[in-house]
Length: 109
Image (cartoon, rainbow, N blue to C red):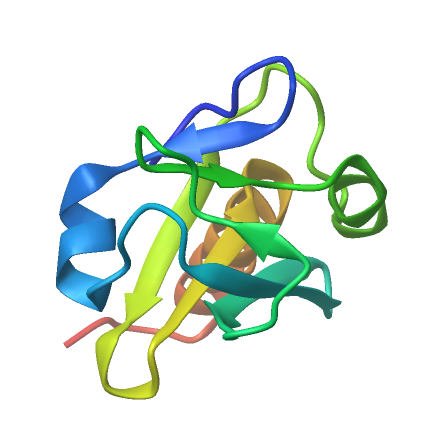
């Protein structure tokens, strides 16, 4: 989990290290099904900040429903070199759907 700064940056040194992303590396940031998918891109429009901050552009945050002041779930797909940023509203909906399935699906083994 991370809390974007007011300007939309997130910092998680463990994830950056796991992905091998260093300050200055180019990034491609794409909204996809109410989440942001971030990957390395040599000539990317965005860059890992000098202090290891990742930018989340305001237009992409709006498209994905990432609200100011709300946390996001970060999921690193190490083998693919991707970081997926999920808005908390999506995570809450997925957990609620899972609980509904469990409650209506009989016994849990």
